Image 1: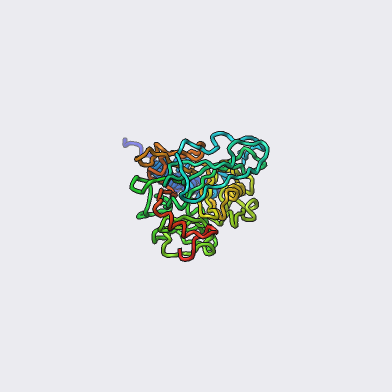
Image 2: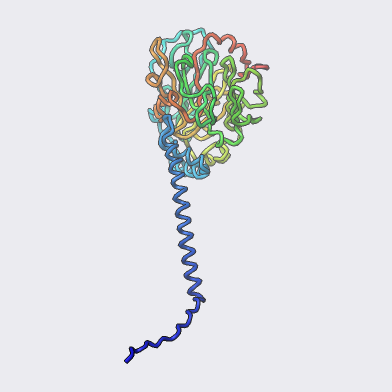
Length: 421
């Protein structure tokens, strides 16, 4: 007998799935693909951002980790986030009413001199206190510091309390004799940006007999419509009507409103702008207390108190630098005006960026980090800051008694540069 043959039936073709199940499966598949694509893209962005951030942290110089991080966020579209964070942080550390200054916020008057007299400008006159009670010893009394230039003091320091409601807040002041000193604007590797700027950090003994060095202004992209010019190159256009720190070929330095007090002449070497003037005609300009933080940097009305700095020029042409913690733009302006500034402008703000050093080298030795003295002990920057690559520009003042007569003759009685230079 033959074997049994299995009977087979034709199998009907399975119909293609349709309906809600198919749409759901397709949606799940698309979501998985989308999540995978987003994950890959975010991973790539994080790698790129991580490399960029790592390079920022590894940048040369003495900037702190926090300072480098903040500047990296600002450089990558986070200026608004940084401003918000700074505003929130400082709004919770407003100074308490009353009180006495912390010793670390009073200027450091390290043994200097000895000093003679007769050279340079007349020393600054004592400043009357704005606050009667409580009194603080030494307030408004100028003390000579640093090394003598032609036997005379080229720098004096003191402090003033500019905020009657918060009597523990101090603005420390440094007065500089511009007839005995010449000033230079030094470029940093991020500000003004690019290469080939001169002079540039770091400071060396070949730059001259260094007497003082201090911070300049905001990053150019953070100070809207503020200019930067040096030695024939423009990093940001010079803006008419804005406060300007101007350096001349003979070493003079002055402060004024561009287009009114100062105009371009061939002997101008450098111009550094940083917002409008905050002192004009010897008085704080109107409206400082009402202006919002976007104009003056990380301040909302008068509720945010930060480290601030500013620079002004007196009637006889001396420079006055002011700095302190928990200052508003209003109290900074008050301090500069009380110190005799006819015109003044804000410089940089916030803890990492406010610094003033004067130097006490031994006879025959150059100025350097080892003999630098912070104007205010609480300033956080290292004394080696400007002797290494610096991310931001800064100002250096050098002893130059040989040019004293010419610089004095070029200054008008009002402290402005005479016509033509």
